[in-house]
Image 1 (tube, protein in one colour):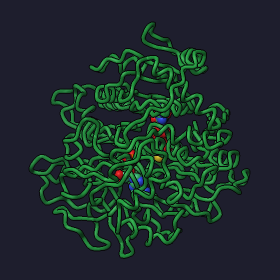
Image 2 (spheres, rainbow, N blue to C red; image 1 turned 90 degrees about the vertical axis):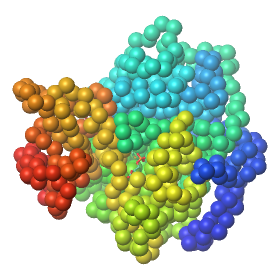
Image 3 (cartoon, rainbow, N blue to C red; image 1 turned 90 degrees about the horizontal axis):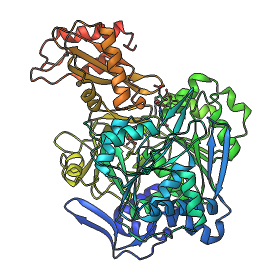
Length: 635
Ligand code: COA
Ligand code: AMP
């Protein structure tokens, strides 16, 4: 394979040649006429090529004689149930569901919104869309109806696929009422839903609008309605995945078919060292990019067995669940967020439960989604008897790792606190506010020199201006990651924080601006601020500060409880917003900017200085004592 340095230099010397070579791993119905086309900062890969992502995930493996290989293992720790699907089984299910979608008028280019828990039907629905050239938009189940409605209005889906319920420890989460409410709230009207009924809770179906998954599958099966893969342009969208932006309006990250396939397939061997037939487990959710890329698409493109796990690292039933899944299914590599390991460590500090399982097939643990603190990495290394624990860094927009330790090329020395080095395709720089490159070990904004490689977002859904404004405008010629950090003298990157108002809660990306928009709607609230404060398990959690309108004389605790409930109802339980506090006033600069950064430093027990531009320094002391009274100051 050569050394990392050789591979990276090889890419830098001839990026188009590099990605033309990588593209040979994919089945194309028509070859590309141009590998890369760049126009005004936008780049399109494999122009002129035609292909199909479902073909490359399923049909090609069956055609190659690997139909009996296990494609997907559904392991529900919630139900104590395991179900395995071979490539041939999965292909049959996907083709049948494509028939169902087609019978409801779904065609190439139509959007289909998928709002489902971690059941195999979610992956079937995604792949069925890909088969038809329809564009799926999966929404994470922990989002509330209002968030769902915002995505419906932006994506304008022809149809919604959902389930009656999801399972969270100790409770059944009704999904269908949220879908009904979202349809009611949205301006774009959805006329058809297909609902997978789970035995724990049956949803009531609206006659003529809602259809039962099983009935529809039976019908399509009986009539042999199993459409073949539709040929789509490599540059056609495969999916739109919404992610938090700096306002309450989520950004529709577009992923194309061709570049996505090439990049993901390349990453499976070169980044994760996974070969066809290996068992790969990304313990995330299909509602996040990790789930899209590494539960569904990449392992199937590579001909692996993927695990779709319904459960939590702890409490389902205990902190040994991850070890149980690894042992039972012969997992070679696990990918999860550091928070999952912090949760396991809290419950089982000596990793004693691990002793109950045979982990002989397990080789590597990959971590991403949030900063991996050295302490957690070292604990995991010890628990896993010295197996490599590999941090890597990427985001919804990139769709695959930007910075990693490329285990399939060369295992580089691990430097704790760094996800290691840039992957081919990513020319990473750290710049100051003026866009000037800074020297090693100097913190600045992390940017990627254009063009972005295959797999990265070509644009935002029907919002090219928003794409340019969010990512390209601030540093001309570069893509802004909105992360800050530094490169050391060996070219290792250290990702330290966001440069915007996004916080990272248990590996979930959330906008504090979006939460402020919700709180501002409370009739008693005059102004508010939400900050993310350090949390030992989730990395960060949001805390809200509320200033009440003059004359409000209701009990403060009542208003605080209402604020918490509002975030749960409007954004969803995933926000983990449990604490709102009424304060007399917010600390501001003389120009009226709320000093969120300083408030966060106070809460985190970090060093803070009174900014020279502050309006009234006494307010910071008030905030400090409010946080201290609430027991929220660290250290
Ligand atoms: N549908 C409905 N509700 C959901 C949900 C879903 N799909 N997923 C989460 N929720 C709810 C939870 O029930 C919880 O609600 P609560 O406030 O009533 O307890 C809330 O959203 C927060 O969920 P979660 O982030 O899972 O926190 P938790 O406290 O239940 O569990 C961890 C903590 C660390 C175990 C959990 O965050 C975890 O497993 N993290 C792994 C990291 C991960 O998967 N990251 C994804 C990116 S790689
Ligand atoms: P998401 O788009 O939800 O995947 O979130 C991406 C963001 O999570 C990044 O922009 C970072 O802020 C953070 N992140 C992801 N992986 C890492 C990592 N390995 N180290 C530090 N931060 C990370």
